[in-house]
Length: 599
Image (spheres, rainbow, N blue to C red):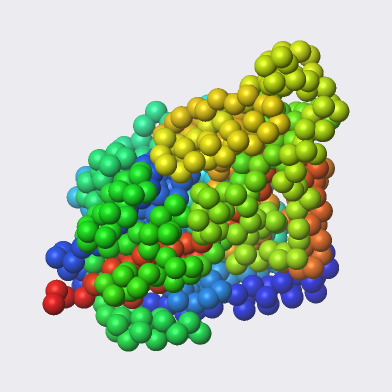
C-alpha cells in the first residue's frame, strides 16, 4: 500500500473517532444506593477476568468493573470512539505504526486488600501489564488474536514463555512501553487499522498486577476477584444465579452531556439526563433465568427493569415491529434494531467424521448445510425476529455487503444427491453410513433451554430429510464455550456479536491462527488464510471488500459453517427507567441511565 493511501485511511479513521462524550469528571460519587436496576441474563456467566472470559454476559459485567483506554459515545450512530481513561484519542505516528496514549491522572482502583491499604492510581504500566496478559500461554486467553503478530517484541517473549513455562512480565519490549507514569506507547510491526477499536474492547481493560498476584488461580486467571477502576464493583456473586453490582464510591464520575443524533427518541433522553452527575444507579441486580417464559413473566410482574426479548417470546408482546397495545398502555418502551451479529452452525474441521478438506468431507458438510431451512427457523423459532445472514459481516458493521447472496441454499433433494455421489450410502434402516461402511452419527451440542430444544428439533428434521442419524449433547452455556475452545464439540450453534464495528472482527473467525480462541470451527483453510492476511494490510476500502467477497465464497466452498441469521435486539424497558438506549457495541448502558422517583 502506498503512503498516500495510508494517510487517506488515517483521515477516514479520524472522522470515525471524535471527541464526544462525558464532560469533566466530578469529585464526588453521585450514585444513590436506593436506586436499583434489575436486569436478566438468559444464560450463566464464565467469570470476570477480561483476558480469560469469552462470553457476552461476563463481558457485560467486565465493562462496568474495568476500564479500557477508549470507549464509545453513548448516543452517536454510527458508533464513534471517545476517550475513557485516556486523555484523548491515540496520537498516531510513524505511518500508523506507533500509538502514543496519555492516561488521565487521578484515576484509582477500587480499594482492595491486595493494595495493602495504599490508594492505588491507574498508570500506563497497568495497560502494559494487562496487554501482556493476553499473550501469556498459561492464561490461554481466547483474545490472543487481538495482539498476536502485531506488536514489536511481544511474540518473541510469548515464544520464550511457551518454551520456559513462565511469561516474563518484567521483560522490556519496544512494542509495549510505559514512557512515563501516564504515557503508553505501542509500536506495531505494520499498520493495524483496528487498533483503536481494540483499545475500546474489554479484553484490553486495565488490571492491577497486585490483584492478579493475590487472587490468581492455577491458570493465572482472576475470574472471581474483579478489581478495576470502573463505575461499579462486584458486591456478590452466586454463580449462574445472581450477580450484584454496587456503585464504586471511589469512582471519579462524570457529567451526562451527550449530543442527540437523528433518532427522535434522543431528544427525550437528553431532556431526562443532561447535566446529571453519573452514575446515578447505586445497585445493579442481574438474575440468570434460562427459560424464556420465566423471563417474560418476571418483566411483566415488575421484577425486571430491562430485558432483551428473544424471538420465542415475540408474539406475546409484539405486533410486528411495535409493542402490543397492552404493553404500550403500561408505559413499556422498546429499543429495537438488528444486532451487529451473526448466528451460525459450525462443524469441527478437526473432527474425524465431519472434519478435513477432502471432497467427501466437504460434501458431507455442504449436504448438512443445504438440508437446514433458515427461513423455517426465522418463522418458527425466532418468530420473525431475525433476518437471514447472507454475508459473514452483518449489517451495521463496516464491510457489510447488502447485495451479496450466499451460494448455500435450502435444497434437501440436492443434498441427498450430493451424499449419494460421494459414497454416503443408506443402510437397511434408512440412515446413511460413512464411505468406509461405518455408521454415520452426528453429535449436535446445544443448551438445555427452550431455544436449545427448538434448535434440536429443526436439526433433527433437517437430518431426517437426508438420512443422517443425530444425537444431542446437552451442556450448560459455560461448558459449551469451554469445550468448543478445546475443539471438542463436533457441531454447535454459535453467535458472534461485534466487539468493534469493522468486518475484520468477523472475518477473523475462520483464520487458522485463531483456533482455540475465536475460530470455533477449528478450521485451517490455506486459501482462506492467504486472503485474510492480505486483507489485514488494507484499510476499509473497495479493495478490501473485494477480498472479503472472495473469502465468503471460500467459506461456501469448504463449508466449515452454515451461516444462519442476524437477530433483532428487542430491549424491553420499564417506564421508570430514564435515558436508556441500547448501544450496538457497548454491552451495558447502566452507567448512563437513571430511574424516575416513585409516583
